[in-house]
Image (tube, rainbow, N blue to C red; front, top):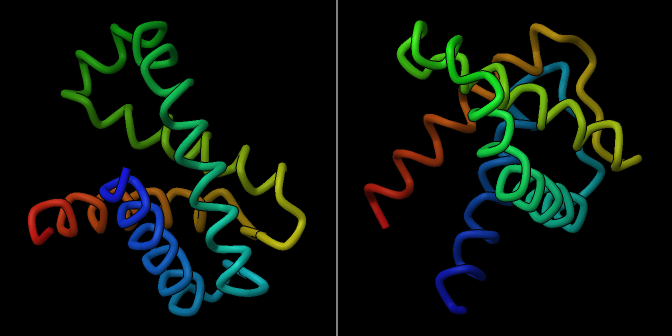
Length: 111
């Protein structure tokens, strides 16, 4: 349970930091970053595996890089579900998905 709370807080901080660094991403507050982290995490938990199974051939042929497109799609869906979170373009969404994936991996190694 404590690990889940730490994971959500770290992910929220990462999202908030990336929103401040990337010009096309806007998050109203850290509370919104917490909400985005929870919604994105739930979407990732429930949909990523299903979408990866459906897109098995592209995942296999791209050596898993197609997963970044799935993450970008889930990030776009999160953007549409939360009013105070906005990503202005597909390019920015892809960049954000890559940075979130790398950031999550680095933080998982550190923590």
